[in-house]
Image (cartoon, rainbow, N blue to C red; front, side):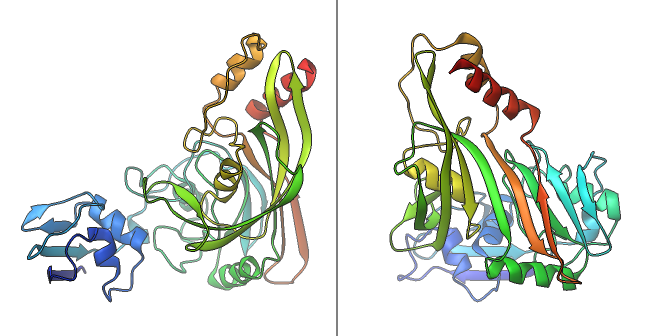
Length: 325
């Protein structure tokens, strides 16, 4: 059953973005959900369908907004080769490949990890929170690979979520970035908020947003006449904000290799090894992999630790860089 919100814009509301206006109403849904509904053509302004969340409202505009229900039973199973590292009655640990989204959303409701999980275990997933994200306790980006844990029941979901909140879950990533981090080892601690210029991106803020902490260490620096300066780094998360590692490293001046969203311009080296140049320019994902995941089992409290090696596309680049030194 849908719920409808009808608003006539008052003087103190004019020039507000419509997604901000709607999320400020007492409708108990997130701004991201408001945005998805707008993109799904659930908004009318003056009886005209509007699918732009950034549209600014005008005085006396008539807003009609439909909040439709999300139903898990509408999610389709997706026959996809999940790389399952561990599974029991409470949880599943998956080594996610790059190129697949974690859960359904605008533009892709059928070919995600969630759909693959439904194919694998049916409805035996937790249903806490968003109905489009059954089982999903935490996420990694579509073009990031590596380890994730999924909850099969609500008790496991609540326990694992508490561990994430208490920062007792160990999450370590490896990345190759442009340039050298200064200092080579350290902690990046900022706020992260949604970008005011591009709502699909995040940015560092000094005052607003959510606190984000990334501990990093430089494992190796690649620097020679034949290759651009690159660094292999390890990042250990204390928090898990959207795009956290990518935003923190890019803001530090060291964006991740292959990251087209947060890339910065670097001077091209004219005598770069051609094979390495082709591998770098041909990389269609960011060089970011969740290598380590550790947590206490939600039923018996036993510590569980998992490790995933770099996938072949990233490993090939790393080997070529080592060889070219």
